[in-house]
Length: 354
Image (cartoon, rainbow, N blue to C red; front, side, top):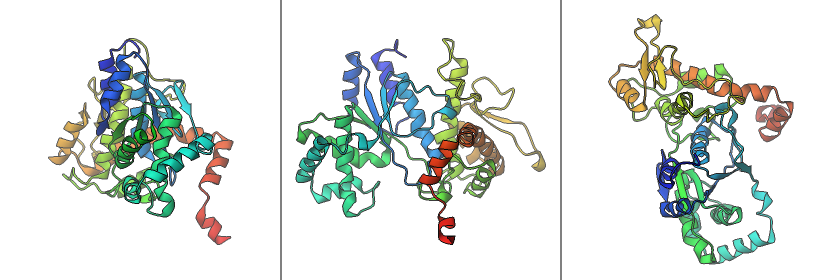
């Protein structure tokens, strides 16, 4: 998207975000003709789950807007997203340096206990070591040399902490971009540490089906519905991306060599622009297949009980399994990846039996 105007790039960067801070910083960089550098950091407390698709899709918007992205972990292959503009960094690459630690000590000397606790309240456990985390994440921005940091809305207090304290060390204030959090299958936040709230990247098809079938999805209820939330936050954005890619005149923006299935989650013969289709179960009377071009209309039909929860769940199971299938196949074909997975997430039950 190098031919886009600064205004168009800014719109793409901030599209679908729940909130952004410091937008003028990004506008200024884009007006100068520079490519902003962005940073998304993550350290899963459990197995990475389907909620990670939300930031990964947003990162693709950044890449299309010529942003240089710094990432710690990702699963892009199932989306067909090219990764040539990405750099992968570990915190230990720079956080063990003398310079970083001196800055961290300087920061600790001016930060109050109240501000440190407040900043980390939503993302770290409230223990002594948790007081250090907000300062380290703030300093990441300086030591990675980025123009903005991206994260979930739960990071907001850490982001405002960084905006307040980095200038006190003589460093530049950065912009901060935030996406909405994905609700869990049973309500509340989808969490890596709660297996019942999420679908893991490596969950086999039958586990995906079991978790979705057990998820709360009361007929007509659109306010506390984990299944609908998945459709809104993950499936429709992915399907929109695939639909836009298929309709693109100037060549594919996705990489078919990394993902053979780049079709939207639409039934065969669906009207042009369909991003999600739901086929009523013939066991319960059947009916015409429902086609949706956006989430708003799907949500309205569910609220008015035109969509049965069982039909929605079946469509969601099929879409999620299509989305996860390339990840599962890649994992099972890579012995080294399997060894790493066992080391990272040992079977606690087996350890207890031993």
